[in-house]
Amino acid sequence: MLKSRRGVLIAFALILISAFAGAGLANPIKTVFVISMENQNWTQPANQFTGGQQQVYHNPAAHFLNNLVDGTAYATINGMMTSISSQTSYASAYHNVLSTPTGNNPSIHPSEPNYIWSEGGTNFGVLNDNTPYQSPGGTNQNTTAHLSTLLTQAGKTWKSYQEGIDLAGSGSSKTNTVLPQSQWTVPLNNISGTSSLYTNPYNGSHQYDYAAKHCPTCFFTDSNGGNNTTPSNPLSQKYAPLEQLALDLAGNTVADYNWITPDQFNDMHTALSGGFNYDGTLYTGDQARIAQGDNFLKMIIPTIMASQAYQNDGAIIIWWDESEPDGSGNQNDFNHTIGEIVISRDAHSNVNGMPYVSPLNYTHSSDLLTMQEIFHVGPYEGVPLLGDAANATDLKDLFAPDAIPEPSSLVTMLAGLGLLAVRARKRVGPGVTPGSTV
Image (cartoon, rainbow, N blue to C red; front, side, top):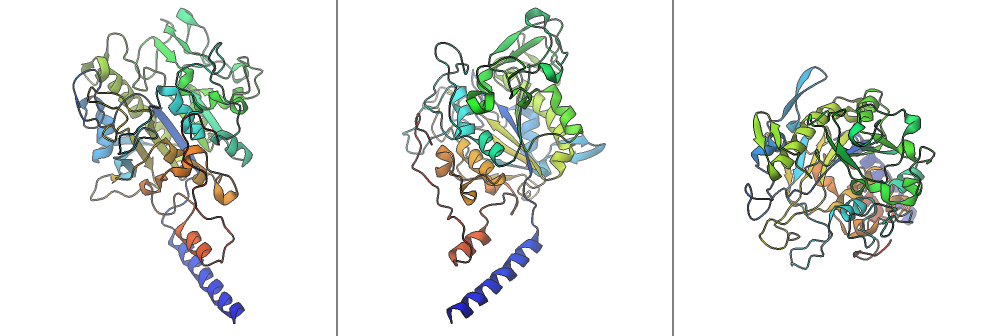
C-alpha cells in the first residue's frame, strides 16, 4: 500500500517536473557582472539634492541612472536602438549591512569592510581601509570561507577587473598603455596620481586613483596569492586592467563571475579637481562625484549588454558599498537606502511599462546568498551559506521566475513530500556579527 502510494506520488512529481520544465519562464543566470559604486545613498531623509551629501534617486546629476529606473533609458547596442529600462529592475529597500528598523545598527564602515563582506558575508572584524599586507595593520584574511574560493572549488571561474592597474609607467609618467599579460600583478597596493601622458577614457582627465580597498578578492590569501606584487604571483591573471574587459567581452572569454571596480573618480567616490562637465553642465562637490559615476555607467553598460555573455542569460548588478551621513542622524538606519539595480534579459518584467521595484529588505548578504544560488555553491550542494548570507533574503524578487535556479518552489515541495533527498533551505548558522567567522 505504501509502495503504491509512493509510486503515485513519484508519477505525479514527474508530471510536475515536466510541466515546470516546459514552462520555461526564464533560463538560469549563467554569467554575472557586478559593477561596484561608492559612497552614495540611493535615498536619504535630508538634503536630498543639496549640501555635501546628496542622494542619487531623482538627482539631475545622475540622469542615466534615473532614466534607467523611470523607463526611459535607451542605448545603441549592436547597431540597434535598445530599451535598457525594459531589462531593468531595482530595489527600494537595500540597506547597509546589519541595519535594522529598530535603530540598533552596528556601524560597518568605511568602504573596505563592505567589500570584504561582499566576499565573505562578514567583515572579519575589519573596520578600516588598510591594504591587505601593509605593516602594521594589514587586513588580509587566511580563510577559504568566501565566494571566489567556493566558485573555484566548484569549477566556476571568476575575474576581477580593476581600473588603473597594469598600465605602463608610474607617477607623472603613467600612460594608457596596457602591460602585456605576462607582466600583470595582483593589485595589493594603491595607485594614484596625475600624468599628462595618461587620459582617462571615461572622464577625459589626467588623474588616476586605484584603491585596493575596493577589490574584494584582494583580501584573502587563496584569492590574492599571498604577499607577492610581482608577475610571478600565481593569481596575477585573475586581476585584469579594466581595458581588458572589452576584449574579453568581444572574445566571449569573460568569467562566470566578474567583479568590475571603476577607479575612485568613476565610482562616485572622489570629485575630479575642477569638477566635471557632464552633458553641458559643470558639477562640483558631491554632484560631480555622482555625475562622474553616472557617466561611467552610461558608457560601460551598453558595452557589456552587446556581448554574447550578457545576451546568453547574463546579469549586470550595479552595487553601492555603504550608506552615508546626510546630517539627519544615524546613517545606518532604514531611511538611508543604497542603490541596487539589476539589468538582465532575465530581470523581473516591467510593470505598466516601468522597471519593477522590489520592496523587500536587502543587504550585501542578499547578493552573496544569490551568488551561492546562481553558481550552485550553497546548501543544496552541501556547502554552508557564507556568514550573514544565512540570515538574508535572496534577490530572486528582482528576476523572472526560474532565473535564480535554486531552491525552486518545486524542489521545496518535492522535498516536503519526501520524494527528494535534498537539504532543507534552512539558513544555517547563527546571525553573524562583526569579527565573527564562518
